[in-house]
Figure 1 (spheres, rainbow, N blue to C red):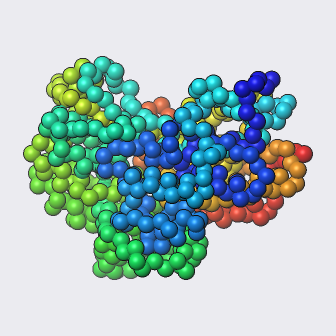
Figure 2: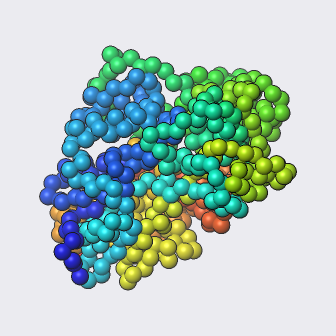
Figure 3: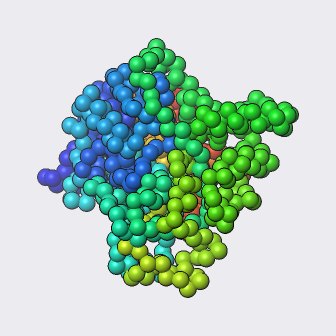
Length: 542
């Protein structure tokens, strides 16, 4: 039953980050659809609004052609930034430009955390409810919350007992944090940990870093940009090129030669070129065998260690940060980009604790106690412990499909999707940048681009043909899930004990294919065949 406070709309979009805004603009271009975007934050940006921690940079660079964000000429013809990587404030400035051009805020309700969304079998509509009690009914439901919508904090003993100040990098205070004179502990050395550590180590009284796994981080190569020499005529070509590569960047893996068919000297020259260009090229621009053959990964690691080891002075600290033995298959845990991360550990007030050899036993009112009995005392404790990635964000919303089936029940024994965008039993529901898509292995805007375009094209097809519902068939869902797992099982990802790519970073979480391991180029081909073939993976009802 609809109450007086229920708003009727054609489309509800959850999230006002890259995915939600891109989807809103695309759907508007169809015409004739009413759209309501619901965003938990008080402003645009999604993840980029919340991730205000020190030193925040994305992993995707802005090329000289400005096509690494939205592929709309109204935007990329005008957007400028000073450096090759946009800092978090640049990203938010970018969103303001998007709003100025498209007036996206007129369709967005901010401070609106979605707590539930239920499908009604009688009316064939979704009822979506926010934390403040607002209710929206829609024909279509689009989840654009990204793969990192749920933060993860380990369940250590005494986790809530610390009397100092606690921060998680995914929900950093908008006003920032003053570290002057503070004893700071940070747990985690993934991408966020690296960026925070290299930014604050010389701001605080002392910094203690708790490391589980060494981060094989690459130099960012942050450079000033010349905004005078733009080649706008190249924009369409670069946009197409992004969708032809494994990673959604303008560079690609090397597929056409076996690296061991060429000389070690030639391979060394290849590595040198990638290294000097910086960014993620040393990972996603090298030989494709890096995902399948541990020998090439070992060689890449030895090159990386040779380049990096001299930056850490203390031999014992160096061995923890840059171990002689490869800690895991190279390139299977996502590398981070850094600017002065390793130099941070030369600072006299920076301390490194290896929690593989000396685990954290509990959080205490004063700080953190490790297995050797030491209580490390802090004023500030930072959790850079990552996310319950890919599925956690969707699972924390009470989503119920046909016959009241919850998403938790649906995915109880396995994560199953069709094309990484739909789920059998959940009609008219789409999601982007989530499970069983190239999400965690690709440039985010590139992945969102192709998925949002597919969703828009599918909705256009439904509206033009008068269809009321679309639902993935069980067979198509099973086929896509099997393909996702088969692709994963052919790679070295299955041999990494702790990785959010497969769910093993969260204790008790099932290990399975949470990404599409064929890369973006294969994904574009697969979903394009679906659309061009008349969506045979789906059942439509008029």
